[in-house]
Amino acid sequence: MSTPIAAVPTFYTYFFAYIDPLIALYGVYLNFLAPDQAVISMAPLSTYDPNTVFLFHQAGGLALAVAVMSALIPRVSEDLSVWKVLQFSLLLSDFGGLSGVYFALERQGRLEPRLWSADDRAVGGLYLFITAVRLAFVLGVGFGGEGEVKGEKEVKKRE
Image 1: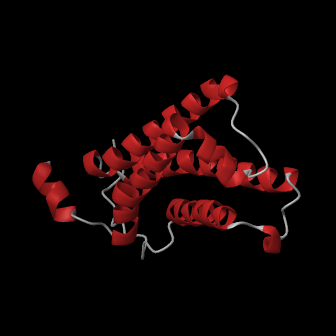
Image 2: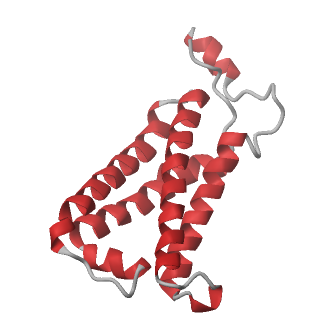
């Protein structure tokens, strides 16, 4: 039995159904078609090694899966528990991404904000924003009261 259809705030619905998949598709592009750009954007002192192409294809495949799940789950399920499981799972991936940003900066001696490039700010800032949105969603920030249910009449009609 699924949990009741919750009143998901419009911001989350729009973000997860439209913005998140587009961001993930950009990751697909970088990993499959522009891996040298992916490397340089976060580690400008590094170069892409074609011998590691398998890592980029694995990351690109994951980004493609994220894009598809992010686009489809909000469209095919109104079950809040399904949405929360998906967003919690993606949150774990975001933490991995944030650690990658940190270690790329640390490895190159660029942890001080004054040493950050525009790419560092963009990639790091985007990861922080996405992570914050997912975390807020998983924690229920902005959902209103506990008993708030969207479409309660619709649920009864379907039964």
